Image (tube, rainbow, N blue to C red):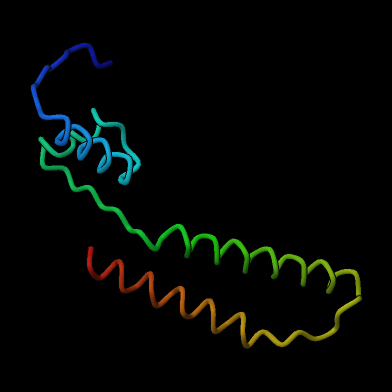
Length: 100
């Protein structure tokens, strides 16, 4: 449980910059400042939300295909585009992890 306070003075521009960076990192200003002061690594990957959206869309499409297959409405499915998109996402994620 956090019970200690630490007051500091800063300019309005510094405060706005800290709040902006914290928001971008998905942290509160306090969490961001503590992490920064303690040299904890803060990693923000701008392209990650888009990749997650693409993966969710692929998963929904695959799920719909499986439902149709189980119902007997689809016998064969060509998944070339699906595999290509998945390979692209995998490649981008690999690049990100190599940088980290």
